[in-house]
Amino acid sequence: MDPQEHGAAEAHPADRGPVSALIPAVARIHRAEAARLLRDLDLAPGQELVLMQLWHHEPRSQAELTRELAVEPPTMAKTLARLEAAGMVTRERSAEDRRQVLVALTAKGRALEDQVGAAWAELERRTVEALSDAEQQELARLLSRVRDGLDEDRRPS
Image (cartoon, rainbow, N blue to C red; front, side, top):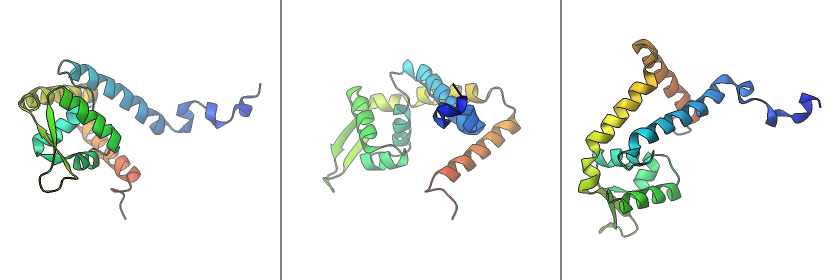
């Protein structure tokens, strides 16, 4: 059978562009490494991001967390339900605006800040250990430009 007959759908991902093939591969490996580091804290990847937002400022509305973390509302609802079931956050209706659900940390959620910080520091170390300081800075700069180019909200006018 002629390889041309299969069309683009069967092309090797690297044939579509080396950067576009590497980004999801790196993201999958990075997320798996994050999962390993967070497992002992009873957190799944993504849950620590919610906690980080709350450590910075709480309470926050569920809608605000959804926007800040750029996830879909059902994804945030499920993440918060799991964090709430684990005793790390509470959710309650705002007294000023009953339409808003406010999310706050519990003592258990607050107690994880140093451990999550250590896990993220280790993830960062593992992520860039093969790069020089200059390469790390360049990678961060280039990834920021790629993000900004793809993100309509960040795209230069």
